[in-house]
Amino acid sequence: MKTLSRLALARLVAHHLPKEGFVNLGIGAPTHVADFLPADTSVMLHSENGILNVGPKPQEDQQDWDLINAGKMPVTLATGGSFFDSSLAFAMMRGGHIDIAILGAFQVSQTGDLANWSTGDAGGAPPAIGGAIDLAVGAKTIWVMMEHTTREGMPRIVSQCTLPPTAVGVVARIFTSVAIIDVTPDGLVVDALLDGVSIDEVAALTDAKLACAPLMKRFRADGAIAER
Amino acid sequence: MRNVVVEDAHAAVRGLSDGDTVMVGGFGGAGLPRRIIKAVLDLNVRELTVISNNAGAGGEDLSLWFGARIVRKIVCSYPRSADVFAQQYRAGTVELELVPQGTLVERIRAGGAGLGGFLTPVGVGTVFEKGKQKIHLKGRDYLLEEPLHAQFSFLKGRQADPLGNVNYNKTARNHSAVMATAGATVAIEVDQLVHAGEMDPEGIVTPCIFVDRVFLSRSS
Image (cartoon, rainbow over all chains, first blue to last red; front, top):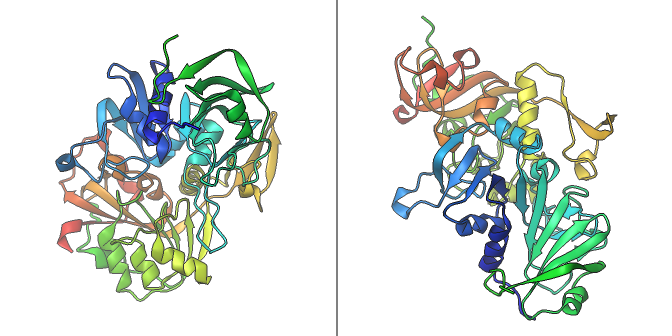
């Protein structure tokens, strides 16, 4: 089955953002969404380590290691941006001031439970939680972007998370490598599918019941929305 | 006139003792008090409890303290890429208290602000509930989180004046501005010392009342 590349998925998510608002991009795959925001966007990106209005990546010779994002990579400050301490950064997150947080995930349940933190492993690797949990609880809207299945082909969208949850009942929308799926009070509803992929194929890779939106859309393999 | 300038990093860490709790500023490499971290190694202290966002990443950071085996416990949100810490964690020689980052900084804020704790919805329904009092208030569940204090806060600033007023550089501010309120002794290494009155009063992030020692980072 065809799937979106990581960058195409980032383009797809960026395309769905509103024209303005305060958005936090989680570390890992969501960070790439910043590279696909339209030039005229009024979206302001927030970073948990104390930035509002994160700008694009700097040229290599302009890197400033006192100006980094949550993934600890150099960024710039966009016009009108500001710096603040971590307490204020998390007040913005927990206090409901962030419109949309885009997070990676290991699993999402059909009721919007999110499992996206490294709980350590049997080999003794230490667990790590960071700020994802504060975003998951506090942002107004949580979007998840992830591969539709694990590397072993197991579903990541499940009836009930088998991994320890980060937060319960918080995810509104899931962007995967093959589909856009909304978490609704009536269950999971497929809003759009990748071109050339059937709903049956997606359902076979999903461990929860899927319904189709009345006007289900299609998106292209580069993450752009197909013209109909 | 008040003057909290000390000569170097060794003077800044004087008095740190076995078993002390220490807050260390920084998010990744930004805002790490590197001179202070090195100077602590010369004190031969042991059994420290460290409160910091990360647990070192193999450079001139908290990895040095884990390497020297002077840390008994770390209170931390994101100990990733922290190989030296991870080895000792696996061996069971270092204790980890994992705290969601927003809860970590708010516990420090509560400590510095004289509060007995606070209620947060973060962690409800997860393993972070464990051992905590759950309180139901106006239709929502919260966890009672307790304040954090330390004998020392070790921080990195951009500028300081002799009174001890401090500002920070960009994202190097992170946890430091709050840690400056919660340590009994607060020592800050800075890139620049300026005369009293030179800093814009509106731009002083940590007012001098919180600061006990400052020194010019380059001088040590």
